[in-house]
Image (cartoon, rainbow over all chains, first blue to last red; front, side):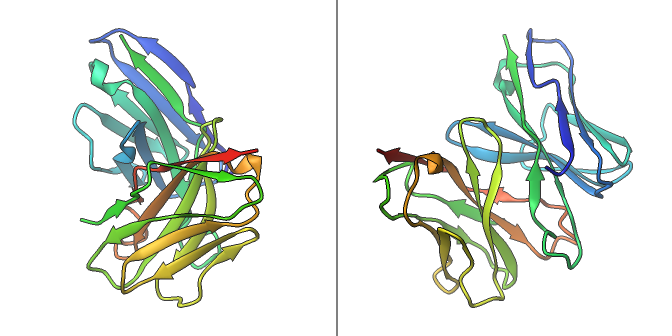
Length: 116
Length: 118
């Protein structure tokens, strides 16, 4: 367990409402990621962060924003949720450097979001 | 951009038998990492095995081994002595070493659903 906590784990919301998912890590890793998982698509990168206030877009970033004001927290926000954003969202972290665990992504338990 | 292809949406194997899951990828880079992740019904993503492209030797982890064919851009996973607990979705993933420390994350295939028949 790499000390990654996602919250909430389950959420049901209505179209047009804002939603924020939180990823919290306890190991001071620099790199953090948000993925979404949909049947037939595998996992696709939404946004990632390479440090406090340093973020960038991934493959499927439209409709999502992120913030990282502290090393340990990476927030994913859906400003106005749509039914197409119904998905399972995974946060991940990675170590860098020369250690044996470097460059391996470790994932949180996932957050299931349903937009009605 | 790199792409990862898993051509088998579903595979089935008898318990105790051996099964091989296929993965091919497309890249113009010479150095990279390849991974297999397992996702059981609990939804947790679990690292199974990883391979550095500069290493010619195929990685092994207990009953799990890979057949890494760099020229063919192929990275298959072999599971020996299949067990009921191996039933899961398996994802192949690629990671560049050129992204300044790993900022770009992983590129995943769409997954293979492995069924273990008792």
